Amino acid sequence: MQGPTGKNMTSPQIERAILSVSDKTGLAEFARELAAAGVELYASGGTRRHLEEAGIPVREVAAYTGFPEMMDGRLKTLHPKIHGGILARRDRPDDMASLAEQGIVPFELVVVNLYPFAETISRAGVTVEEAIEQIDVGGPTLVRGAAKNHAFVTIACEPAQYGRILEQFRATRATTPELRRELAGAAYAHTGTYDTAIGAYFARLRAKPQVEDRPWRAAGEAFPEELSVTLRREAALRYGENPHQAAAVYASPDATPGSLVRAKQLHGKELSYNNLLDLDSALAIVRSLRVPGVAVLKHNNPCGAATAASLGAATERAWDGDPVSAFGSVLGFNAPVDAASAEFLAEPGRFVEAIVAPSFTPEAFEILTTKPKWKANVRLLTVGAIEPGRGERELRQISGGMLCQTADDLPDDESTWQVVTAAQPTDAQLADLRFAWAVCRHVKSNAITLAKEQTLLGVGAGQMSRVDSVEIAISKAGARVGGSVLASDAFFPFEDSIHRAAAAGIAAIIQPGGSRRDAEVIAACNQHGLAMIFTGSRHFRH
Image 1 (tube, one colour):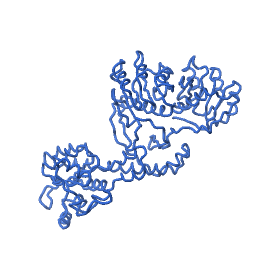
Image 2: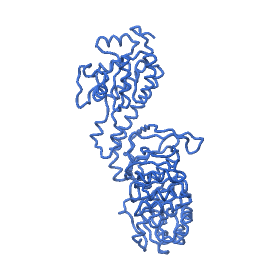
Image 3: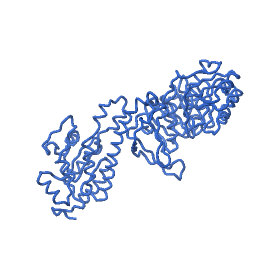
């Protein structure tokens, strides 16, 4: 197709480019090759300074438009001489005549990425004012204009795209319609992700007081009428839960430090789908434990957990909670992994798939990567400081849609706890009850946990009958059950579980209460001399 100037308008040659980027990765190399080939470069603000410092000739946008940058950079590229040059259709004589009449030059390449809004709001302590200043206005307008006119204009919004553009530019000084269409789609996804992150941020600002005041009763107004979710692929996984399932891991644009998706893998094989599920659960458990704390995960349920005076002692106790199940497990730590913990895990007969922790001491890292037989494969991940839960929104897919709720990761208000039996828990029992209750919320319901000396001894998970979960937990605890405490994620519908617990030697119980037969359950505890606490809150995990 020939344009009004007689040039090929199907793939016009790149004569001019406008560049305005926040992420300057690879920009100088990209721009230098364009400039060396005679492409005229236009840029503003920090992008112009970056190119000038690299010795690359560039024309200042303000000098071209005749309009200065204003308002601390809020107003830079929003000008008809910029957007006219991007939006003009090269096969329309009237469009090209308008450019000539107004002294506007056409741009065939637009290189733009946006202010780091998501990265800004993920920082601890960021203010609303700081977040608002990272809302880009001119950038999205440039991106969308270039993408709309992709029949004639190439849009690059990620450094990873520079190589493909240069490859075609070197061959023909142009790009193909197919590439421009592909880049246009990526550009709209880029701005869509950006706007979604901003919308989600403002929704959280609106919902935050409600979530903090009544976390488990967040009313409908805490959830917007429309909810957009945009995620960025972090990695393709080898397979999903099973080898015949394809899988990938995606990150939320505003994922905070301390979250698993932001973890840094220091060592080991590629993470699997199931590894990530278990690591996330391990991280959630240790987030709710006193420091130092350790959790041992198997098939997305804890088979061991403990807190102790030292991390090494906590590691040993957590593993010994169920050493058979712990073989091939995933571990979570809420304190830096030290040499004592690493030495214990590296002993013969123990095997670990993955560990997530705030960090690893140099000694611990060396031990875990040189001493055990599984040294080459163990996955070691760091997440930095582990922050407490914030009750943020979480999503779960169902057929044809999503469920949305506030996360069950906020601490319970112990002022609502009530001892409902004649027997009172001792101080040691109360500490164990707190621990068992903290772990219980991370077990698939119907959930029962047994603990003693702040060590998980037995778990009953995912049973259709609560008394079956009690039986399984007692069986797991074995001879250690005497004097332990029991936590139940929901009320006991009948007294049968109480009689079974008493027969095993369990000394105290914590549960939400709220059954029609609470009086019978309390009477059964009084019959056996058991202390029982009602928390008033339930922790189902389906």
